[in-house]
Structure formats: C-alpha cells, structure tokens
Length: 273
Image (cartoon, rainbow, N blue to C red):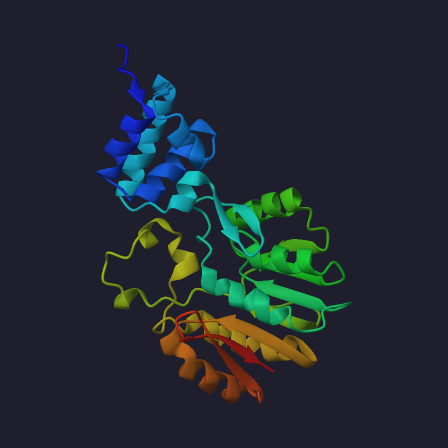
C-alpha cells in the first residue's frame, strides 16, 4: 500500500499538535539531515515515505516523554556533542559545574580518576581541555564503557583511558590528585512519577539507596585513602543532600569542604580536601 505524501509544513503542523515545536524542528531536521532553517525555506517539499514514517515514529516516542537526546543519539555538553544511547544517562547542564571547577586548578602533569563515566562527557571534556592531564575513567557498565569509547575516539581524547570497575568492590588505583564523580543520588521514593523522560534512563545510574546517599557515602569513605596530599574529591549531589555530604566528609577526615551552587542557586557540587 502506497502512503500519502506530505509536505514539510504539514508534517510540522501535525507534529506540533503532539509535541513541543522546538522538538518538532529538531526531529524533522534530524530525519531529513538538514538544518532547522531549511525546513522553513522548503515548506512545500514533500517527505519521502521513509522520512514520513521515521519522523512520526520519533514524534510518537517523544510524546511518550522519551528523552530527545536518545531519539537524536547525541547531546551537547561543555564544548562538544557526545554520542549516547539509552544505556547511559542524558547529560545535565549542572554536571558542567564539575568540569568548570576542576579546570580552575593546575592540571599539568596531574592524575584524575572519574568514578561512573556514563557517556564519558566529564573525563573527555577535561582531557581535551588539558592534554597534560592523565585521566582514568571507570564504570561498572560495559555498555556505558562502549559509549564512552566511541566518544573518546570521535573526539580524539588521547590522554583518557576507561576501565571496567565497580566502586563497591576493592579499589586498586594509585593515589590521585583529583577524583570526580556524578554518582547515582536520586531517591526513588521521592519521585512523583511524571518527571520528563527519567523513566527511560538506566535506573542503576540514577537511583541510590539510603535516601539517595548510598553511593555518595561509599565514594567519600573510600576516596580519602586514594588522594595525594592536597588532593581533591569533586562530587555532584542533590541540593537536599548537601548537609549530609558535609557530615559524611567530616566523619572520614576531610577538613576542607567547599560547596558550589547550581544555576538555580542550590548547592549541587561539593569539593572535599
């Protein structure tokens, strides 16, 4: 059966009844492999049958709240676009604070360990910013490591290596100048169920036990023994966990504690030394 043809303008109008107009433009640009202005200078152009089916399949998935980044297969972070799929979290703007703060330090000839790399955005961004920084990124997920390796090769991050490791197991790393982590810290019990897209993301990378503190506690407890003198641990966490992070840090012996607010003025990153 032959499908009826449809103009670009008609496809946009129909999709806009179901999803955000900006999302419509991004998805149709992706399907047609053109930039967004092209859509409005070629409004009468007909979509091929394949383009029409592909586009409205994507619209349907977006209507179900599947993250746009998964549909497009990429997400911008820091200075680059990163490949990703549903085996890794969608990068959040707040995580750029980790990169920004680490770059304030002298990184020449230093060693950095990232725990839980996901798509590799933090390790790769830091490695590209300073070629004389040695970066080891770890993750317990083989699928995440595969995604990170794709990004590392694509962006030519030669000073970054990735290893399969679970921070709950024994640590065999040498002492580091810097350790950074954006671990799972979401308390699943506090979610109300309609958070946009979160249920499409890997639960293991999002949720933690003990009101979201389990992995943060483990990393704080173990990291203090794997930092060089004057070394720093950088952690992303939820704003309502800030005081708990300070408490755990002091308990294990961290004496220098700084907390950085996100773009909404809420404590999002802790720097422990």
